[in-house]
Image (cartoon, rainbow, N blue to C red; front, side):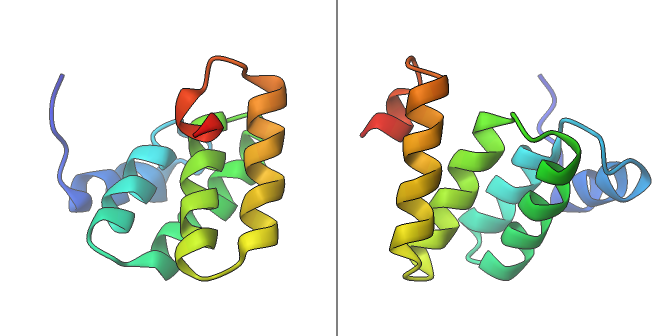
Length: 91
């Protein structure tokens, strides 16, 4: 699997907001502490794919970093209820 750069991912996402690659871009932003960009990417991506549990998990991590604990908890509960095998959300 190719390891895309942030620029490549930005280009792919900008050309197609429905691309399932949005969690990868959000995770890259999260890993370099660009939480606002990561949150915006998740918000846009989840508008098109409301059941993307990876995107929701990354968004919950962003909420925790930004001290939005109740929002994070709500998302994590939703993920665990709908995807019982998502051990990251469970933890």
